[in-house]
Length: 157
Image (cartoon, rainbow, N blue to C red; front, side):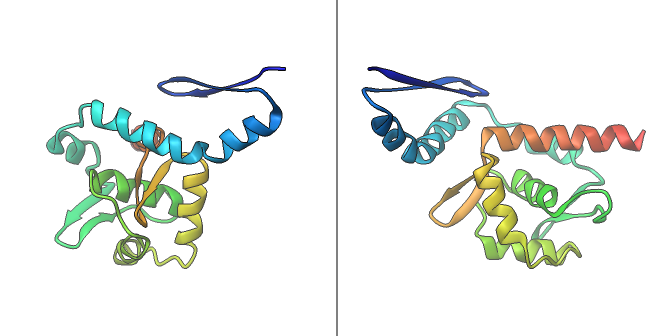
């Protein structure tokens, strides 16, 4: 009996086929690593926005300091997870180690002992990719942050 699983991604469908359910399960166990590889390939093929347009888009939300990107919005307006997403978005293409994310949150006036758990959640949700112990946004994560910024802009009006 052939078994086929189709996983829908923003850039298209990924199909996994096997002769048994055990073979599919085995393939799915290595799937997160494959998603990272696919996301990296798609990101490298996607033109990045110019820095000035990113700065314009995030004016009043994030400020770029010599320390790195700092969040200017209060906890009431965005969650820690959203703040992490904004930091990673502005810092692209650089990947951030967890301690650096924590430091930038603290400098933004958002000390959070749970930021490591938020990064893990974001990875499970496909919003971030972990490479050599450092995190950066996936394609889905970039779109999520861009939608967040649009929502924040609409609430200002």
